[in-house]
Image (cartoon, rainbow, N blue to C red; front, top):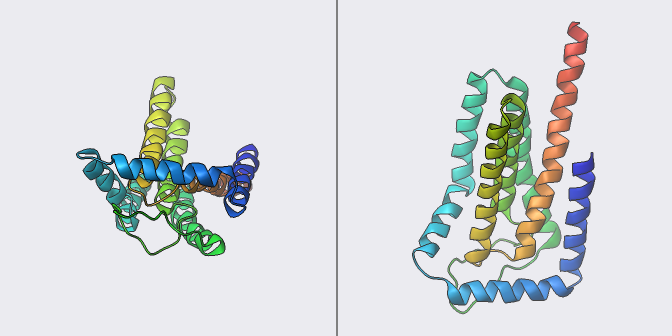
Length: 207
């Protein structure tokens, strides 16, 4: 509930600031043009690779791999949480894009060109839902604290890397990726809480 309220509040504030053309939008433009002017190899190719891995096709593959692994671990409730969180988060993101209809960054010499809306970032949403769920599962099932810390650090690093790649490539503004992370954390909180509640109720019925 704390995560849901906090992340929901952050998303609301970011959306309000973006739609109201507040100071963050000026920072968005400045950061976007700085990266566009300073883009260079091999970093550009690396960021294109990161974005490709976390595109819709890439996320379908990652989703299937994690789903099979959870099935083999007999973590059926976590598998159900995965089914709701990642595809559901991606659908929610598309809906939010059409609600806000923010144009993507524009440059004279763009690194990528996309016709869809910008706010919030779809790649960042998918990555946050996927790695957030993976981190939540591993933190619960792995008792060793060093494993838990390493898991959270690695998953957080992947989320931030995907978010950075989208800003670096000029596909999104900073506020787009921040809003996507906030949106995804809120959605994850809803999904994990709902599945956990379902599991507890079924366990009580079998007692």
